[in-house]
Amino acid sequence: MPREKPLRTIRTFILRLLIDPHEPGALQGSLQPVPEGEAQPFADEQALLAALRKVVRPSAEGPADTEKE
Image 1 (cartoon, rainbow, N blue to C red):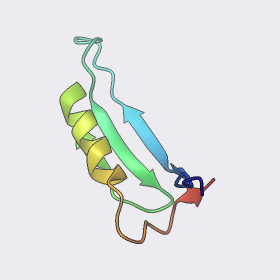
Image 2: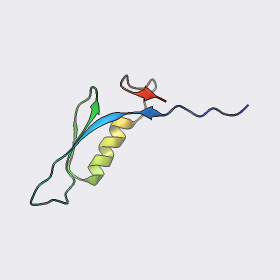
Image 3: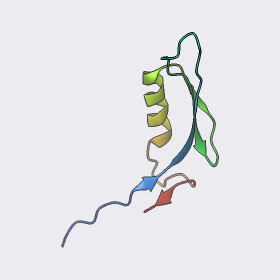
Image 4: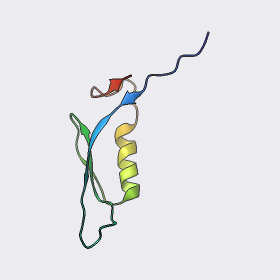
């Protein structure tokens, strides 16, 4: 029997980027899961990746705000 592929999970986020006119290349802001979730602030690219990994980690049952495809 062929092995079934797991369903993808689609997550929705609000990404707020804060642009400092004195440092326009700096990546700062917050990442917030939708529809519910607390904003995770980040101060640079590495912190944004860490925030993404934190909110995307799969749980045993999966969060209620995900869609399966």
